[in-house]
Structure formats: structure tokens, C-alpha cells
Figure 1 (spheres, rainbow, N blue to C red):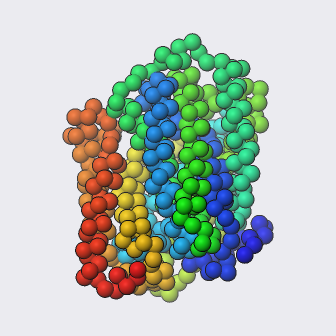
Figure 2 (figure 1 turned 120 degrees about the vertical axis):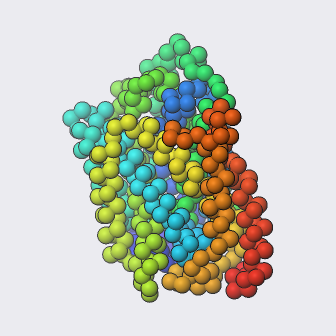
Figure 3 (figure 1 turned 45 degrees about the vertical axis):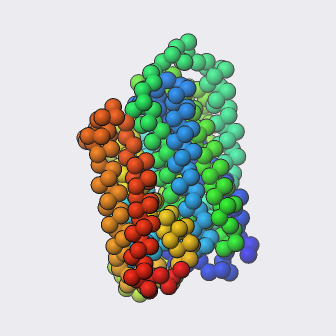
Length: 463
């Protein structure tokens, strides 16, 4: 089926997408994930490797590369779930946790969306102000927010089309900034000797890069659920993997470079300086790209909130009006957070990412094992949107127990400002909690769920 016209506002929300509405190809996945990552927030994430973690350039780039390659594997594996099931990722999570059991995951993901939306708005405002002082940071925040809201309200197809052009324009713009920074502005003589290598900091930077792409896992299916069922696992995986990894690693390396140049200064200011005489058009391009990423987060945040509400409202299926109202509510909330929370942005942002790491990794372990190894992609989709959870019930205790166990397992390996676990202290402050969780919880959930399913014929029948 051909795509609907771009000016048509999407009417669907969390209900399964019917086969006659399916359209698009796996190439859409490359452009949306490449385009949404090519923005200033990705640059700032890369800068953390050389600023907060203090690595010198080559180890920083290696840590970012390895982390991105690992984290994107898990994120891209979720891409195949959308075409097969036709529902948003958080709705599909009910198949593992039950209709009410999934609520904790949904709430965590909603908080994630709010954090990313506010972060994008702040950096957009700061970038506009740095390039053009006639516009205040708050005015820039509002500008990014409004553009994002419009795209999010129009929905799925406009965001995909938006990303297609953003991916091309920002890719060229990023290349220009690289060239300007290295050959026109020039690197300081101490560039390759600034910073120091330590294993804890290397692991920290690697974990941060892994989380950057892994954080997309809760909404990958939101952008594949309209695609035909025969899109295929392999094409979906590689289109998503290549778009996300390439769209992340190049801005992150630029960020690591800028971090070494500015030291304790502003990464956004360093980005502006590196753009040289082209600063204003470059910032405009990257602000538009940032608005694209923000629209994606608003759109998916709406789906998550509607999933939460629909859990407790019997026989209600949200439509267009509910999506628009919720979009505006998210816009207003994130706008306030973005305006108020501008101070000490980098530290707050890094801590926010680590909290996401702790709550998302157990979920992604359970979700992927359940989809690929337990149910083999075959679920009773109508049960996902039933108030009582259908054949999956209100609570699926194997998944809930494994999720709680995953977070408990992470605690000794956590390394944070407020808390550092005993094993993390032994490792010199290296945070490997996510690696341990993935290694332990994935096989444990597989064994537990297969054992429990023998005693739950209704669930087993979904295969």
C-alpha cells in the first residue's frame, strides 16, 4: 500500500495496525535513525568521553566506537518486532509482563522520554543563542519545542519523511564542521597528549555510548509498526543498526574532539567556534535535526502515556484527540523542565543516562529473549490491548521477578556520584552493571519462562 499524504494527520495510536495500512520499506529505518542521531545532543554525549571521563582522543574514540557497536545490537534487534506485531513497543511489553506488570517499565520509559525531550530543547536553545545572541536561550528552547510539537502531532509518516531529508543535510553539515575544526580553526598542539587513559574511565565512556543507542530500544517498534509483515528480520536489523551506529559514532567523535579543545568550557560554544564563518547556517541545520529527534521522543512519549492510561480505563482505545492533547501536555511539561533545568546540564545529563541504563537493560534482556527464543515472534496481538491482559493476564511473574533480580544484580556494580557499589570500587570505579545484567538475566529468564510456560497452557498457546 502507498503511504498516505504527508499532510494527513495520523489517527492511530496504540491499537494494532491493520494489514491494509501497512506501507514503507526497511530503507526508512536507516534514514530515521541516522537522521535523528545527527544532532548536537549526540555531539555532547561524545564530548563526555574527554571531558567528564578525561580520556585522550584515541582511547575516547575507541570507547565510543565499541560502546556504540555493542549497544546498537540490542536496539536493532527490537526493530523486527514492529512489522511482525504492528503495535508500539510498550504495548508489546505486556506480552512479557502482563497488562499491569508492564506499568513499571512504561513509567520508566515515560521518564526517559521527558528527559530526552527537555535535554534536546535545552541544547537547541543554547545552540541558537551561541550562534545568534539576539535570540535568548529560552526563546531558542521554545522555537525547538514548537517545531517538534508540530511534527509529533502530524505523526508517523511526516516524521519518517522529515528524517529522510535531515539525514542528508546534517550528514553534509557534520562533514563541514569536521573539516572546519581540523583544517580551518585548527587543533591545539596538545590535542593528542591531553587527557589520560584509565580502564574505569574507558569502561565508563564505552557504557555511555552503549546506552546512547540502547536507549532507543523502548521505541524502535513505534517506527516499524506500519511496515509490512514481510519486511524481514535481517533487513530490519541491518537498516536500523547501520543508520543508528553511523549516525551516532561520527557526531560522538566530533564531540570527543571538541571536548579536548574546550576543556572545561562549553561544548556547544566549541561546536559554534569549530563551524567558523558557517556557524549560523550549521546551527540552523542542527537545530532542525534536534527538533526531529525531539519530535520522535514526543511522539513515542505520547504512545507510552496512552499505553499507561489505557491499562486502567476499560474498553477505551485512544484516538487522534487523545494523541493531540497528550502531545501538548508533554510539550508544556518538557518546556518548563527545559527552561528551569539549564544549569549544570552536563552532569545532570550523564546521571540521567546512567539511571536509564539501570532500568532499561533488564527489560531489553527479557524482551528480546522472550521474542526471539521463547515465543519466536508469535504472540496473540489482540490480548495486548485487552484490559485484563487477555491470555497474558495482568501479571506475568517470571518476567517481573527477573526484572527485579536484574536491577538487584546491577547494584554492586553501579558507579555513581551518590552511590558506588563494592565491586565497582574494586574495579576502580568502572561501571559494568549493564554487562553483568545482560549476561545473567538473559539465560535466567529463558530457563524460568520456558519452565513456567509448561504450567501455563494459555500462554503457551500463543506461540
